Image (cartoon, rainbow, N blue to C red; front, top):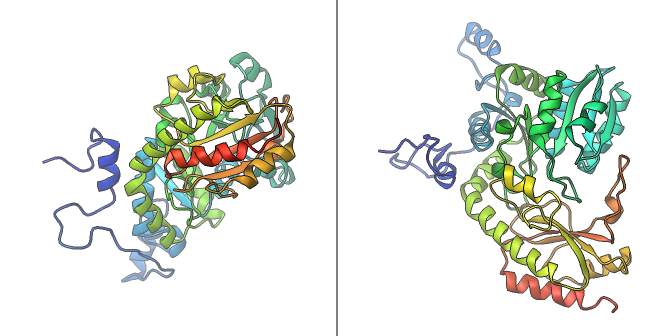
Length: 397
């Protein structure tokens, strides 16, 4: 009989069986929600013993999590190929915790110019106030260029691949070589790649996920995760989680566990849908280019093919330079099946004009025309294409 925890089993099988009692146990299929604040102990000695294991999956107090949290931690660590995972309340919290864990006053951080906007706000705001300096670098920098940016006090090289809004693919193994040679840690926002990019195989020390996206999958949960692959990093990350009071609702963890059961089929279908829509958009005369790493036309497609096993369904569309930002907004407004809203990774399609949101300080932010970010959901592609066609047809000729 197959061991349901056997890592040689397929991804879909592991997502169906991990974090459950198993197929031949009398009871409900899904585990129950464990929520609470106070944990009771039979005696003071038991409480002291539990306190000494506060970095482990033991019951000490509600903010340290319970069985529902622990099951989700184990599943995310399994997906990312790590050993330990901490669940926090939001994706931004997952960005903040390791940055503040590894950086102190007087330290220097390197961050890609294509980074998620709220992460940039954190670096330019609280981190600056804490005496931490951040330098933004070209996400496509080569090893020599990155080496020139390293300082004796550079403690973190942050990465996000592909980049927010502009979808540059970073050479993570090369970045890791430079960072580790200088004694710095590599942090990566791996939300786009999720299980299609194995961070620790490529030299990442800490992997960050917004579980709000594909993991939960239904646009009704806010969660984040921080995953590591060795005891030293776990001590640093978990210590920061505890000291910062980071906590996620057991109910949200349960919803995310439920979402993970169907993740493989959702992600596969949405990735296929996204490519169908993207290839159609490439043929449209109104479109200058697509920002989709899985397309051969993408400038870093070779890096994507080397390091990723697949894609997700989030990408950018750049309109011809004759169009304005107002034209891009008009296209989004004309869409009937694409909602206008932040986030992505749910079952529904979304669209946002992105050009006004792009901030660049390390290079030219110009894409050649106004940009729109699309998230393709589980709708029928012929319906999505028809919707996009009627919206693009409204543009002036």
